[in-house]
Length: 139
Length: 139
Length: 139
Length: 139
Image (cartoon, rainbow over all chains, first blue to last red; front, top):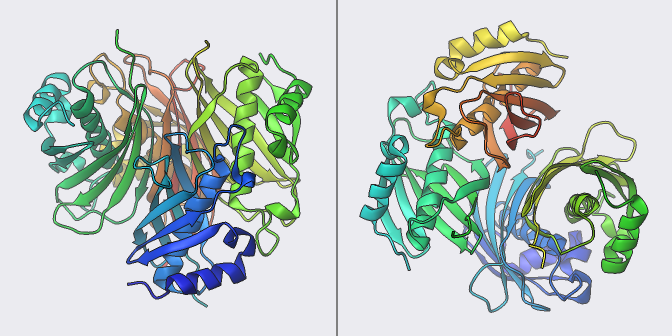
């Protein structure tokens, strides 16, 4: 079960990653998963009003990072070791993105999580991602 | 909704891919998804009794292929264009694998599906996969 | 052989993607490949001075996009359909990133390119990426 | 530099993975890389004479495994933790596959290798793969 709440994660993110924190709202923490909103601003857009690929990468990455922290607590510094993303539909213009993250493994040294990314209010996902993290040994 | 049943898919697989068909049982067809069993035999094992990586690839690949066919019918020849897999736990020795496939997109030219692979009876997945298929234009 | 030069690509990027263009220098265009520099600024950094994951994604994505344009010319709008990245080493602090892109396929509808990402001056890559693009039919 | 020769690797594979060994010829071992031939037999083919996806997965997986062993020696048991593959062209019918493997990292706990797969005698690759391996700690 999670050992950090939405508020714990929000405070941690604000302190450690203030730039990322600006764009992120943690909507729900549950066992082995989180739901995260990325508040879309002009700086996330490509010509035509569509959300950029790096913005979707950021949402997937931070969703899995927060889901790991929620399970293991704010100790050590997990780092992304790999990812795969598939971009399936054009995001709605100027619409927040929602990341639904489900962790598949939070092991002693390795964590793997899946993320479905939606334009807020839409039923079909715009992208999917898997992120793998390396969890450093406790000192 | 699916346009082919478990029996339709089984007959198609038996006729078109008899070698693959030997190992595969189609357990359930639903909207945008299938559940498929791979019956593990000695030829699927690595030393130590663990199921080989290529066997898990095969299960993921055939699961997505069948889920696409179920939705679009037995026309044309979809081909795999890419995949990503993460291997998370050692499969149980000499135990069937179950592939739970959820299609994320079945478009006009591109299909994307996620598969969680389990050792039969276990709760935590042994692997995850995403397969992308190209759907040829109808002639 | 390429049909656009470094200067052609630079002008295209400045006009179509002015935000991305700020950070990007196109160092070399060759047959089925490009070398691209990402000029690292404070906004690309994570705490500790290391370059962020989304910045590496951006470099990989723009490298393959430019390599495709170089081969097919500035027609139509190729879109990223998928990617995989592996992060292998910590980038050097406050150091430009170099993307060495090699296209493996530039087909009629699909393009696939590999990118090795280096901290400028280092021999071992910090990351690798494969990006797949869908090329829209000419109208 | 490699600590095992072609003959060392061949003997190791024959002893530890006799089934895989049947299909594999180790053509070259070099610093951080190997070239491996997969001898195509009927059992590797799909209807139409094309080499199956699982066969290409097998070649990529064994190529990276052998390249790791060549660098670290026959100690411990490296296991595949993830992979991505892109299938770009139809392999030539009934033609051996060649795997050109280049390791990008052979670290203390993690190894990453790229593989280009060719139909023997062809210039354009039929597929690409990246395999990640976990290297167990020495006991």
